Image (cartoon, rainbow, N blue to C red):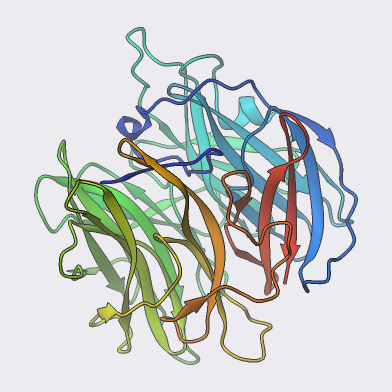
Amino acid sequence: MPTFKRLFLRATLPVFAALLSSCTESSPTATTRAAAETTKAGESGWQPEAIGVFTQFSGGIDHIAFAPDGSAAAFTNVETSCCTTATFGWVRNAGGKWGSINNTQETFVIGSGDGAYGGVNDVVWFNNQFVAVGTRGGNATADGDPVQPIPTIWTSPDGITWVAKEQPSGQVTGDLEASPDGTTLLGTGATETALMVYSTTDGTAWKELGKIPNPKSGQQPFSTDLLIHSAPETTPTYVVVGSFTKINASGSFSFVSTSSDGATWTTQELAAPAGKGGSSADTALFFNGQIIIYGTGYSELADGTPVNTAIGWTSADNGRTFTLLKLTSNCDGAFSSVVVDQAAPESTMFAICTALVGPQEGDSISSTDKLVLTRDGSTFETPTNMAPEWSTPSEEITVGPITLDNGRVVLPVGKPNGEERREVSLWRA
């Protein structure tokens, strides 16, 4: 599978500790400087809101959630050295002022120095509180191997003070999605042989709802996304997408599992485009009356150069069958996040996709993310009204994940602000 190198790391932590074995150059622990003034709106139609300027920090925002009263909580996981991560968190009160979350490192990571790791994989507003899930663990063992990550749930009524609750291995660590009526929150976890689906009605007490066994032996879960859709007066459709990868070998295949109750699941393999060396299903959404899944196809050129391409699948029968979706885009790789603009006068989907910005170095390709949109789910183009501050893809600028703030499209952006300083902001369409 190709390796993509980013100057500013924004990756969500994987489920398994074995995936934390790659090393990067060491960077100091980040410190923050308050800066919460809202900047003037640009002529692009996107309005910026400053979160802050941070020293010795590389990246943008990985996960963010908004409450109905205007408050918000945001997190970034940063790899600071080999097998060592730091988690940074910010909170916005209902009045629009941003600040740092209390005791972020101790609450969300545990441990210090080489080998301390952990991170938030998702955060939502549910049951009048912020709920975050992910993993955390102590320092690495004496031989440098990371310890098994501990699934952890964090809750906070205000985004400032958080309570951590560790879970047994295999419990919820991944994507969170609320039921259509808002009374139940679902999340995913994984063992070495199956994907697990869990549910909660209060955000803290979780129970196993269903299990998605691996349809092929000798493979383990690689990534997942959870979608719950309910058309008016219909039974909800639960959708989990992801991929299974061969243990101790290369290659993966994509799958989709559907359910009418979240407990009993039907799984089918998603066909890969001809000539691809494997694929992963990365994200799913309901758009224009169809369930659409976007993923990545992996292949190589004759000289061994890795090539990643965006691929897609669509279902017009509520998930019973899926067919390959022919994509036309100016993207160089997969879509990492997608949202439907609920305020647009016509159906519009915004997406963040991979853009190559540098030459290949060995088996690595310098890449970043960029914003695109589509009105039919298959033909993507660059928006014409992007702000000049982030419209050109660059290793120095991080954009995404694209998300919604009470129905309004929001784009987090991180960019340089002097030497060893990063400015992080939110842009609203």
